Length: 67
Image (cartoon, rainbow, N blue to C red):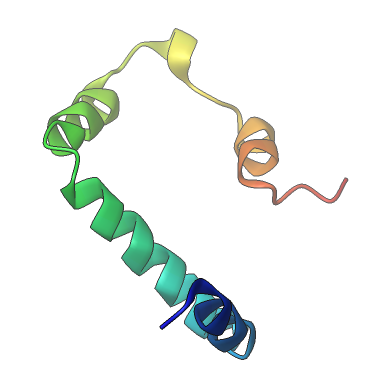
C-alpha cells in the first residue's frame, strides 16, 4: 500500500478515528524509544514549580486556545 493510498484512507476517517490513529502511531513510535517510560516518569515526578505551566500556557501549547 502506498503512502498516497494511506493518506486518502486517513482523509476519509472521522475526527474521532483520526485521533485514535494518531494515538496509536505515537504509542508505536514510543515503543522504539527504550528510555521513554523512564523519561516520562521523571517529568511526572518533577515537583519543581519553575517547570509548571499555567492552564492558559497549556492551552496554547496544545493548540486549544481561541486565538
